[in-house]
Image (cartoon, rainbow, N blue to C red; front, side):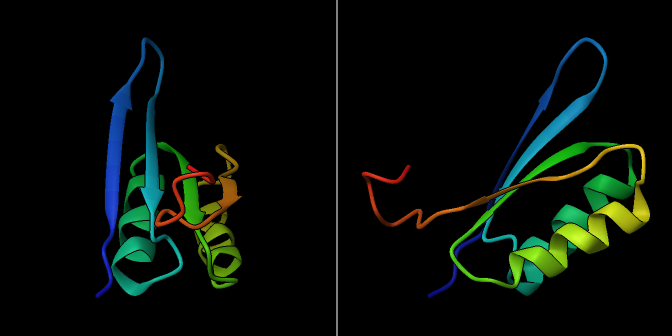
Length: 79
């Protein structure tokens, strides 16, 4: 079972989003869309595909470099 969660926080100056499962299709689509709308995104996943998502987000929004965090959300010690 694949789960993707995203949280969006609006600060005074910008929207920030944390997307877990960012290497998967749904997570990647969510990240790219939010980045395209101007959000600063934090991408989290255990898979190496997260770097493809990072590149795609940077392409749609060059002003905001995405932050990449590689971890396993099912491991309580990593979260």
